[in-house]
Length: 150
Image (cartoon, rainbow, N blue to C red; front, side):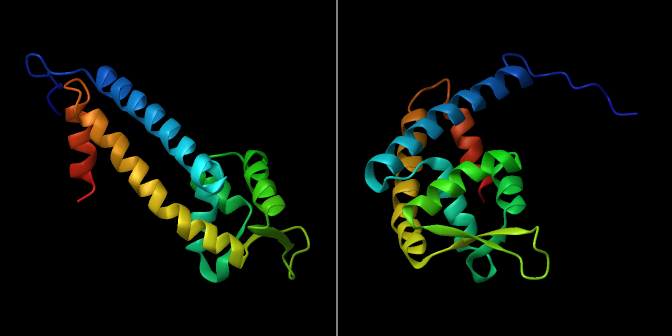
């Protein structure tokens, strides 16, 4: 039987560490969304859907796949895909072998927008993490995130 976990003196509890991670996540998401909206006219969910489509075979995915990967319910993922469709960045197509299956398909304009937004996303994320790392309360969390990336 494993020994119970006893934190070192002055160690942050799991709950405190999680709350710090959530604060960083919320602030970074806000900054990412603002940068993407301002520079490219797309929201964070739309950017993530474009990225998934851009990295998929043939630039298309069943609607359930972006929902699972973005962490949204299928009904919630239809809104960003509908916005992508309205902007001309994607379109919906029925599965030829199963008329009930719906695919989101990336357009060339959507691929171009995704490529342009990719650098903005990376810059905004790095900037947000750099500013959080300057705060002694958040620096260890940022360091752990960056170390986990390899």
